[in-house]
Length: 588
Image 1 (cartoon, rainbow, N blue to C red):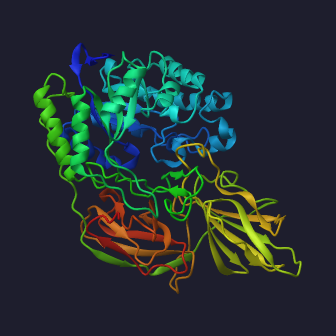
Image 2: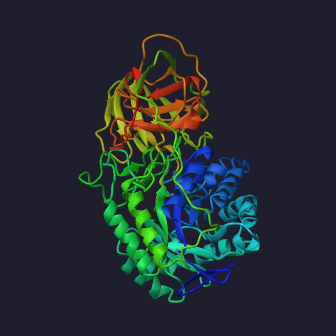
Image 3: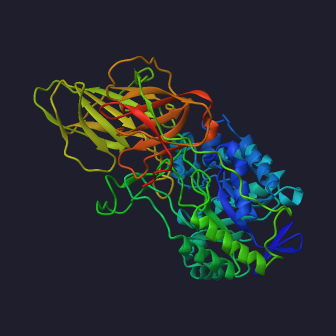
């Protein structure tokens, strides 16, 4: 049994320093879990931490998917000799779409999400009833490896509904969680005041100055051990912004100071992985937009890569940061062998990784028009949620009244990007939150807006947003009514009729990658403006000419010997000519 006091943790009566690293099972392929977890053990970590994204497991109300993955991941961690920390939500942030909350739920409850609203809590309870048995039966006090379970996530950064937190904590206990519960918040007084619960372990998150962070925790919880639940040793990237890196020696020095202060630690991230498909979240600058600090828009979608400049890179290979962290952890283990305990006594070794495929070029020779679903008539433009889409594209079409003279047309509540066509001609690219002069449109014209969701905000007051056109389309001051909305879901790969011909705009393009042996791959779409890439029907993610990310990581399990189908959805003026294989990641 795990217990604690102000001096630290005891496991079955013996001292334990929790040396953890974050690896999200949903950002790696299951076939990769053994290697990633073995690499943590070889670094000197004795614990793995993971979030649980609710929207991945309940994409539609009452329809549960991929639930066995969490249990399988925890079991693999045990096989690799690692204890585990589980953070089941319901909100996780994690730069994940909607912070992990299902879009169908937040569209219904709106700003009542993350409160004690009965409708919201009923949905949370129904999900936890299904999710938690796999965690409960794997707790350390039942012979498993789960040491700690989180109550919500960084709630003090968002709200102050203590009754909501109490409901969650009581619900975890009622469902059989007997290992210690914990909260995690930023090391600021108002966050720790609002985000903690009496009798529940409090932890803090920070990326530097551990002494100050722990001092703040001590002010609020002198009886709790010191624990940095998220040591941000790297950072994530936004499209159209520079790639983040952190000096490895500086990061190792901060880790050494955390341990010297007597703290337990969770490296966020130890291995970042990939925001496959359309799972990446977004951030939003809530202060007045400053174009010198933010590019294109105050809305900033997160890249497909979640490399995070972590000790293990996106492919799982060790970096200089890994080697320096490994040295710090070895020093600590030599000085405190009684605290740096593992689940078993094996001698860890770094795992062998697959080879990287040689450079190459895959011509795109088959083309297809975008296969939109049936048109849905509506007086006003319906949101993606109203159309039953979690993510994807919607083509909205309107007819401007034939009033004779031209007038300005503008879109209210665009989320998040749109191509505007007037009478079939591409005339403008529109971006959320960017003030633009109204487009002059003649009376009687047909107006078409191809709107793309780029990920829901995962942190802050914009959480729970809807997608599509959430306001309306105005011709001068007049709303255009009588909309036709044609949805296009991106997962699974939409069925389309491919054939030869000239690549057009907004098109699907297909090519074949033939392999004698498989391996990891880094795929680029040179000449592509903005779009998506599938490999054998699996959506790797988005690409964007604005960078910083250039290559998409394709893990070996997605490839096969022989023919592999590559499909690109390009939203620019013309399809790219080819997909290229490159020998290393290009993240900016």
